[in-house]
Image (tube, rainbow, N blue to C red; front, side, top):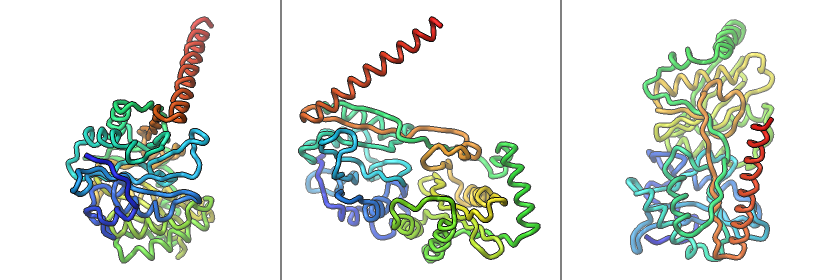
Length: 366
């Protein structure tokens, strides 16, 4: 297989890569997801391209969108290529044809990388799932191709397996304090206010869903989005793909809380949430989380629910298991700056090992 560098417009011609991408197995490994990130999340001075792996004369079997930053992040002055990861990325997975051999594809990708991206000192792959196949496959492949690897934890991901689990069973297992909050605030809402829950999912509901979410977000405690056009594009694209579940809680006729869930590939991701601070005393975010979770578990029946990226303290109350999304930096020792980066990382690793050994010895003697 051959690795070739293409313009991002290649994403539109990928099988299933039309405007909707409806029915694509995993929205976060789909052309639609890649297109909206590239269209809305490029920084000044950056460029994007797509690395396509396939047989000569045939269509590609694997696509990996990458960004070409104007300034290297991990080694000043170096030439960096990085998988197109943004603050919204919850997991990194190449866009792959059904039935692809992961190990074979990763090996071919690593073997062809130098020719496809000449002059690159290192490649960055982030948000790789430690439980998925691509982390181990890329680790082996780039080691085998003569690159020096630095591996690190990128961020935490809180989740729970839900296959065969009902909402009532999950709710019964929540911490007592959270269950009590749901009971008390639910009674207070129904007893003294007009509370209305709405779930948006259909493509023709995308505009209303977007307007409701943006209204709540503007009244929330959250800072402005780093890429203002992304959320609107996500809502519209996910609705077209059948992956959107946007929950809205209105209190006395005013939007009070909103959540964006992405449901695809047997997984439900709680992607974004916000609530109007005026209604904080009613815990509208918790009430809405419970309502949308009940709907998703009853109607979509995912095998897993996760909280996207980050270690916010409230997440473990709902989804008590944590796993890592990891990163790989593949330094090319055939390049002077790549070799310098590899030597620097090797030195840091030796220092960390010596410090750890000293701390263990000091602890044992104390």
